[in-house]
Length: 203
Image (cartoon, rainbow, N blue to C red; front, side, top):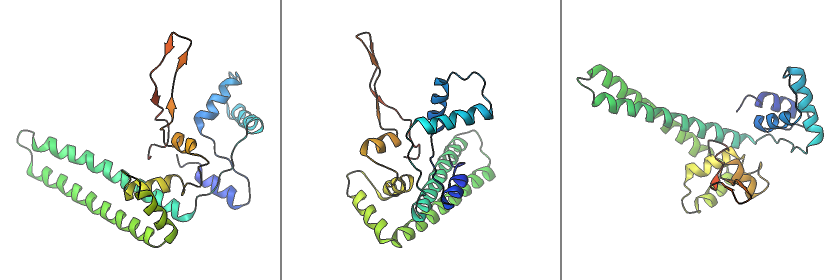
């Protein structure tokens, strides 16, 4: 989510060393402690023990342009999702018995409004890429990969902060939820191999 960002930036800007750990990872660790009572105090104690026992990577504040890329690509994604829902609503209205002309008109106006908003976001994205030669070069390299378009490239750059958060291909695959999950035990348990889909949903 985004609710950690204010605190992370606040501490980082004041020279503190910050680590950001996924909640499910922390929850799994707390279960190993066999703590039966969960309070703020016991959770704080567990977090402290986790940070002392495990090696945690230091959080790096994303550069300004990548933070802006992430916000704009996420905004566009939200607009597209909303427009799809409104289009489905319009389709249902048109095929219903005796639809109201005013309702159809207002629904069509909402779609036009969302189309206009998407155009504005795309214009801001293009202007942002145009303003930074380094980002423009990386986008060109990513777009040279078969199947990767400009929006995909910008989304990946925004979500990974220009790949500065990634240490390896394996970590990138896991971050995107494309890591392979296999369940096997002896000769009786042979689960179907699949991708985890437990990564960044925007990727």
